[in-house]
Amino acid sequence: MGIRLHFWGAAQTVTGSSHHIECAGRNVLLDCGLFQGRRMEAVDINSHLALSADQIAGGADAGLSAVVLSHAHIDHSGNLPSLTRQGYRGPIYATPSTIDLCDPMLKDSAHIQEGDADFLNRRRGRRRLVGMPPGPEPAQPLYSQEDADQVNRQFQPVMLHEPQLLAGSTKDEGFSVTLSNAGHMLGSACVLVEAMEKGQKTRLLFSGDVGRKQLPIIHDPDAAPAADYLIMESTYGNRLHQPISPVKQKLAGLVKRVVARGGHIIVPAFAVERTQQLVLLLHQLIDEGQIPDLPIFVDSPLAVNVTDVFRKHTEDWDEEACAFYKNNKDAFGWERLRYVRTVQESKALNDLHMPFIVISASGMCEAGRILHHLKNGIEDPRNLILITGYQAANTLGRKLVERLPEVNIFGEPMRLRAEVDSIGELSGHADQHELLTWMEPMVKGLKKVFLVHGEPISQLALKAEIEQHYGLEVVCPKRGDRFEVS
Image (cartoon, rainbow, N blue to C red):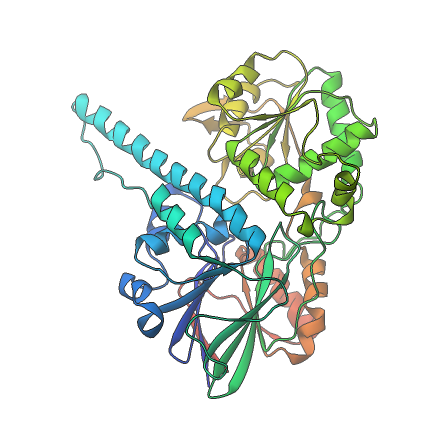
């Protein structure tokens, strides 16, 4: 008996999670994420899925039987509409919270795809008007809003800790999955795949993204279940985080310092999870009188829609978040907090000449309204750009973290005069020690570990620690690598 693993995404990089597994003639895709990086490279990678179009549309007998989604982040879910665009009509399994988050997130991603294609085609038209070569062929969006809607129709909810036999499988042949809480974001899960062939069973655990204990809003990660093989993320495999507990005091100190000098706090934040965590922490700080009750704006239509999903799924909240609910208070809303929906409202923030906080997407400063706020505030030394999450290589966010003296925004060079600071404590990814601790309960039965979702320097550091501490064989697969395990 053998399981064939094909690592198609998040292989020696932190984006585009996608892993194809095959057993007993059936194919399952673990995640189908969007690769995010340089434009041409991203277009090429996102356009070539793990299976051919014929395999994707062929159904359980000829191709893809099922997709299992670990969580809703776009680097894990964002290429699902490409599957439906190429004809896949099978089930996509995920937790109820993940399903509800994916609806607005995938529609937003499709809107970005369509907008990017429109921008490139308008630029191509302008070049032709002035007699210049138009450049490449007309751009096509990777997928459309209709493709994203189709994904939503194919979702099937799976509850945590309840085994689910996948489509086309039987108790003796095929796959079953059991999800456990990954503690990374609302609805996130680790996926235990049990591959069955002729009554023999092999257990493969896909970690998804492993979270940390004591993160705001969500429950702590479950202990790793027993398995024969582990596919584990390694985002922070070479780092140790600061403890989460002092984050409120650090945030309070930053707010008071910037308010005292009359500046603005510009916060690039992921619309999902990080925005809601910041809003809850700021709500607590204002209630406790630790910061002034200054205007706070969440300027992201996606974040507005996602926050409604957070309000719906109180079953995923931890005790701290539930305290608001029990006291009949909205954890994500109060008088001085305003959710900005329209472009006109967003632009009006540029005319405010008083201290305020604006939280806006994208979290890596690559697109969206945050670029306008950065353009208007990056050259004022009174302002603070507060980085709150991981910044991938080559993104504007990474350049801000590295404090390059000059960066391009909308193609225009801008001097970085604003203060830049980071709150890494809110990271939803476990660090090296936390990953080692999380996997410890399953070490005794493990045969091999595959590290994914990490840059090479992080993976090599974590590989060395796992080999030293647990004596296990560790592999860092490249994009396209295949393995057979049994």
